[in-house]
Amino acid sequence: EYTTYDPDRGVLESQKQYLINRFDTSCDVSAATGQWECKKIVFYASPSMPTQEEDPDLWTWTQEVVTAWNEALQDATGRDDQIIELRANVPLLDADGEPVLDSDGKPRYRYEPGDLRYNFINYVTKPGNHTPLGYGPSTADPDTGEIINATVNVYGNWIDYVVTRAMDLYDVV
Image (tube, rainbow, N blue to C red; front, side, top):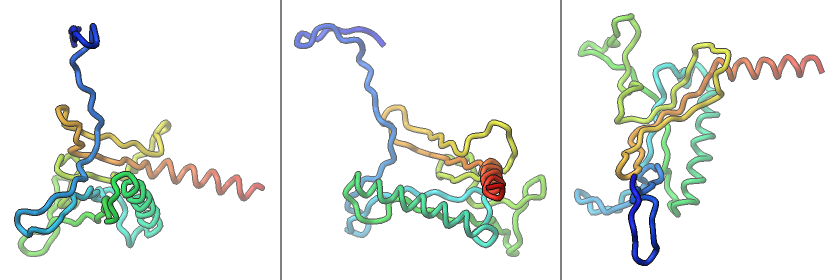
């Protein structure tokens, strides 16, 4: 940063531009189809998130949050289509249809946290004394502010603890 002088405005503190971090949700005409297409924000469930069969309530609540964000983004952008999508993760299979395992013997997935091409809802199961209920870091292009990758960390063990405490208090009263 450095100071500069503008004859109309006087001394300026900096020539630095400040850009808001945001996803690219623009719409454009597709060169391939000639149809109007809008970009979507797709979040994948991390491998640590229970499947829909294992915890249907968690998936219902997660989808409710995605729906709420869709409504907010539709109001902000004027679009009426689904802007954010939640997709289940799928295990990697070898040529014989068997799951591909990592060095610890755990199954590998098509979409894994750390791959900057994808956004994740990461379900954290490790207990911690001072974990937040959720945390959502993102990686943005420093020149444009466009969010390249985002992760929503949901601390499941803390949510279980809070719900258990609330139910205990409810039983007392």
